[in-house]
Image 1 (cartoon, one colour):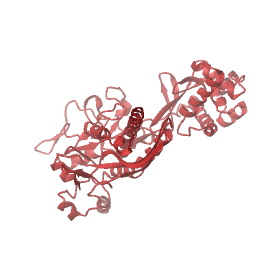
Image 2 (spheres, one colour):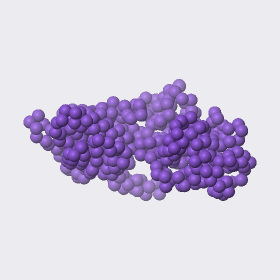
Image 3 (spheres, one colour):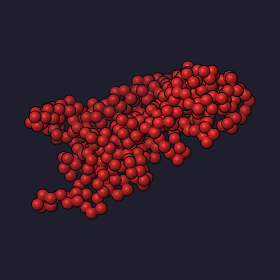
Image 4 (cartoon, rainbow, N blue to C red):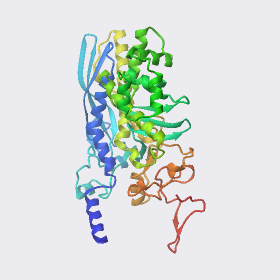
Length: 477
């Protein structure tokens, strides 16, 4: 039985790499995510005097522009030996409408480092003999970047799953929280109960809004409809429905929310502003249009029903350390965040350049305006230093090549978003859902123990007689 199991494992590893998930994630970023981000940016661009439209996005194979101006393909081995960055140029079709002048062209916006052994890599699909001819180790799994000849590993990070409710006891008593995510936006929505028994909802700038009033603002006006969609009878619900029974129209509900939030202006300005905030910031993953309001109301009813049930049943609590309630951000997700922000900066730079040109009454061409080395420098610098979007640090690390196992261990490393100084013992302990997914001994020492899979070499040593020596201060989980 054990022999058959070993044969199956061997066959699997011959066909699949242990770091395959990271490589597939990067491939998805190149093939799909870059184009999706361009489409997202298009929809959010405001058409002022300069109208910019992003078209097709494509990425070439890694190359190097020599001193004489010639361009040659490059392999990871060459990049290491010559201390180069293993990167490829990215092209976007840009259409700019400025006054009466319209110009359209495919421009190179910069270069993006390429993951070794990904679909964009020049060694992709090579046989064992071809890899040896190109001075590559056939057993090298890839999954890392080469920046100025230095190998950098992108550490996967875990975070709470978006768009699903978390019920927990906190400082303010029982709380239901949802992290609503749409693209790069991640907005927390919280349901709490006040001392008077009123259910209040907080999201973005709208804080402590009565849940029943918000449901009426979304178009669910009848108390019978609210009670039916919540589908759970309780004294708390009756108190809430009775408290705001005098609000009988959408305008009344919107005016109430405006007064509660301190929004000032004429009645139309106030109601329009509240509508805009509800559409944009209340559960944005459902939709941002007026048509999504009814679905948002039904979703809120389900959340209120869950909250009311959790009040009466202590077993209804979310285990945040269960891996079903977490999501791991792979290299493609992290690169997408970086690409989205830097393309947005590039577009703003183009708009600013065009406005300056218009004042000087000069002609322009897209290729001269869009050509920017800043895009390449920002992306390369982020991977080289590990300083990421959202003031995160340590996202990338120097590759540990002490031995093959140390390298494989680092390529599968997962870090936590929680700060090391925070006292959270449950997050540090081993959870049953880690079984088969994470190594239970791979964890750092000190305040960050249990938070990411740092190498265990520094903690355990093996004596000459083969006995494992454990440090005195080591804490077993």
